[in-house]
Image: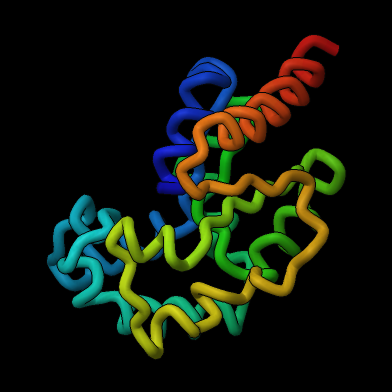
Length: 177
């Protein structure tokens, strides 16, 4: 559901101004190429990705231990982000991801936390999986409190739109200054 929200935000900001960066894309590109797998299926939320998830996490963690910003930089390059003034990084998962963007782009970085209550997530089909949903890849950002915006995504459309409008207004002010 957060993906739907980000796609909506992306389309409302305009594709001329905005690029969507997915940190997982360089990971999944490498994994698909080296294991003869379907990249698009790895990018989906389906069973196919889940079958390979643990191994992808293990491999990517080995890379991150050497260079915590490796996949952030690779994603920026992969999506030609420098061509657009607004970047939406859709799958930031770790404090080190936030650290890398803040170290490299300082005050240009604005953070958005999209939250949904667990009961709402369950209604949408989420099932807690030990070893996955309690791993750093899923919960490292839970202790972060200094988000620029927090948007609740519990199905209240008015609340969701108000959160998005705040972001859109800020971006509009920046683009028009």
